[in-house]
Image (cartoon, rainbow, N blue to C red; front, side, top):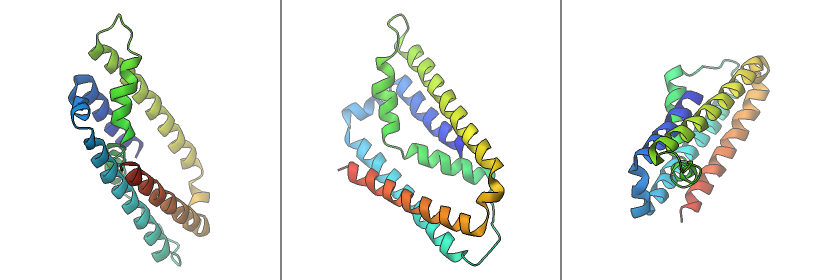
Length: 164
């Protein structure tokens, strides 16, 4: 999932560096559609997680998702994250040194951000990987699925409601 999220952020970073997100300046309502689409996707993930937890409540087996599914999910989450293009459009250009071209500076700062995000997510996945046996216990798994499903639904609602 970390790889997909970094890929999604990289798409926005590259778009901002080459100026395509300038469309957001002309069509600011595009951010609303990003927030609504991303929020709906996140709500769907939350509902799917809760439904999965309820269906598997008595089951002790877990079916791991394929790697491509995690990457795709991470990519969709990143692309549906409305603040992400704004970060690359509004924040990054403010920190480009005057001695650099706007394009080169935006690419450099965006690459630094992507490396930090990728490192953080990889570290988190590594730590959680060491706890996998505890996390796969049926009661722990059920609790985590219900909590994260609820949190995703709330985040999705906040994303959608923030669009208006």
